[in-house]
Length: 95
Image: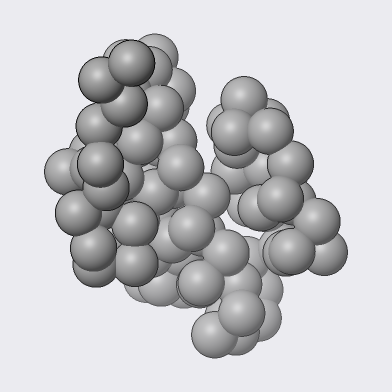
């Protein structure tokens, strides 16, 4: 499912973020990676409303049991906003 979701249009990333919140228990490495990757795409899209939703969602659910996916989401948002994918600087499209 991760490959299919992450291969889809980046415009669907906010939908995948919302849907993934239904699968937050139990914590798995695959789920944490998915949250990081989806949030990274959201950050890279630079849509203020989408970024705000990720941050507000992470801040709104402050329980210890949910800290792993909230942290993974914020960890993914950062490189997306910085323009990096997988730790590498992305080239800006100047065309």
